[in-house]
Length: 479
Image (cartoon, rainbow, N blue to C red):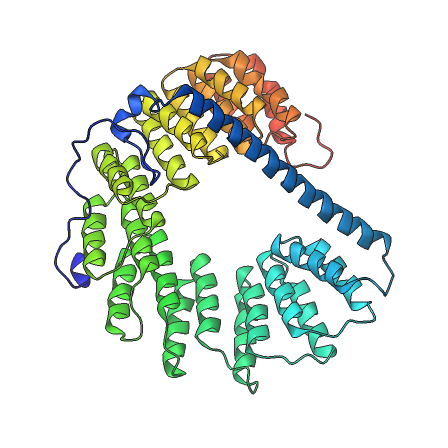
């Protein structure tokens, strides 16, 4: 695999730095070797002023967000109140429709669209229809997408390759390939609607998603017979899907074929998919060789590339190499994303290095990067592994005083952590905590609790939980 890409080997990371302790630079970098002592200190007065300014900025941002939400709610309230009116302001209706399409709120979007069609100023627009059909495809509503497609024809809109492709995508996303392939056949027989590389790439992606690999080969052969050449997006889709399915032979042959095409050059997406495939399966040496070859081919890494390397090294216990990537990012001023912080926090938690884990958690907050449930789950797992129940309580106090949204996945992680440590009273207390946050226990919640009680010989609690487990998902269940 490594020999597939031309160019001499390149050392992906610089040698380890022997750096003196330093404070945060203007480029946003930090000295990770000093993580165990906590964040670097600065003048108390400037710290207080900075904190006050940050708090002020957060308040302003919150007020703006609330005003946007209220304005949107008011807009929808006006629309609902004037339902049946044919003289609504175009901008109001179109903005409401756009917001619902973007948020994939298909039921609400269709209601607004019906209101739009009632307006005196309404003129059929194929672009709006296509956007709605694409949205319905993403929401697994192919039949409703077909109804809109037919309505578009009935209203006299021009049906073209784009609209047919949107409808084909709606069916293929739901795994309805017989219908999708019949649309493909219809496109071939319809003037000015012949499928192009974009159409085939979308259908190939859906087939790969459902592991219909035979259909993929058939489509690729058909493209060749139709004189349609795969582009970089097509090849990247294939490489990514084959990598995720651990079909490394197919992935390698696709990459080699891509390199033979003059029109298709590997890009950073190609590199990231390849590295993710090998790194995710623990083939660290192959991942590194591929990384060197991609660099020698002139492909520059991005933040996603480094996140993949960090994740691969962290999950395989290569902590020195992970630190080297962190130092490299620091040296060349790559700004960390939320995903980056989540990866390294999880890695240090797995390694049992709570000091570094906590330092990174404080650092992300100082960088105004808001933690999410993934971050919190990593912290909980790290504390549980080290048997630090009191630290988990401190984290729960932080959540209570912050605006971080937690979900059932987080509470399941919390249940598992308390069960692992034998803190059964705390584990039981998670259920009312979930209720207070508007989260419902699921099968994982109850199964995790049952396992913990069984391990501690408390079978009297198991019967009640089994009854609650059997009622999950049933209408009007009582738990």
